[in-house]
Length: 323
Ligand code: TYM
Figure (cartoon, rainbow, N blue to C red):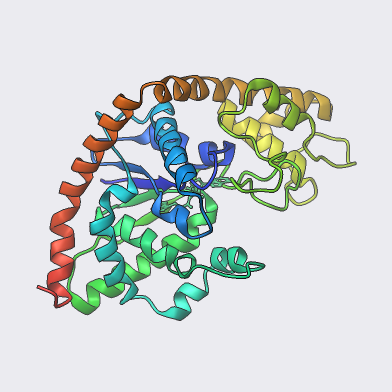
C-alpha cells in the first residue's frame, strides 16, 4: 500500500497543514510511502526565485522535523523529478478537458481578483494528478481543501486506463477525523492559509511560543458565552475546540468539557498548540543548521523516487502511442 502527499512552499507551513496533513503522514509512514515539497506548484502565482529556494529547504526540514524518516518513507522535492513530471503532466493534460480544469473551485478563488492569471494556475491540478499517478499511490492523506483535486486525479486515472490501457492505480483521498479544515483565527469563515492577510489568524509552525499565545488570545469568538462544540452557531469557538482536540487526541465535544469561559478555552488551546509545535520548531531549526545533510537527504530521496517512477512513465508513454 502506497501513501503519498505533498506540501507547497508558497509560504511558511501552518497549523492547518500540520494537524490536517503532515502529522498524519509522519504517524502512518511506511516503506512504500512518498512525501514531498511541491515547489513546482508554488510557481502558479507570482513568485520570487530566491524565496522559493529558501522555503523549499525550510519545508523539507519541517517534514523531517515532523517525524517523517527518510530511511523509511521516500522524502523528496518535486522539482527533482521535473523531467518525469513534465512528461506525465502533458499526457494528462491531453486526457483532461478545459471544462474540468476550469471548474476547480480553488482555481476560481485564486484567479478572482488577479489582473493576470498564470496558465499554470489552471493546469495545477493536472500536475498534482501527475504527482499522484506517477508513483502509483493508493491513498492520498490530505485536508478537505484538496478533495476536488483528488477527484480529478481519480477521473484522469480511470479515463487514461480505459482509453489507452491499465497503467495507473486509482487513488483514494483520506481526511483526518478532526482538523480536516482548520480555520483562520481572525475569520472562521476562511480556512487557515499560508498567504492569509497579515498572518494574525494563521499560526505558523515556526512561530515562537509568545506569538502563538498572542494569536490565540486574539482569536475571534462570539457573544454566546458558552464553551460548546457547535460549528454552525459558534464557528470561532468550534475551531478552537477542534484545534484543542487535534492537539490532545480527544473529540471536540470532550475537549469542551470543564472549560467554563472563553479565557479558559484560549489558555488551554495556547498551551496545547505550544506543546505540539515545540519539538517540530526546535528540530527544524537544528536541521536547517546543517545544509550538507539536508542536501544529502534530498538527493537520496530524489534518486529513490525517480527510479520508482520510471517504469510507470514508460508504460504510459507506450500505451498512449509515443513508443
Ligand atoms: P498545501 O500546501 O496547500 O497544503 C498541504 C496539506 O495541508 C492541508 N491543509 C489543511 N488542512 C487542514 N486545515 C487547513 N486550514 C489546511 N490548509 C492546508 C492540505 O489539504 C494539504 O493536504 N495541492 C496541494 C499539494 C500537492 C499534493 C500533491 C497533495 C501537490 N501535489 C499530490 C497531495 C498529492 C497543496 O497545495 O497543499
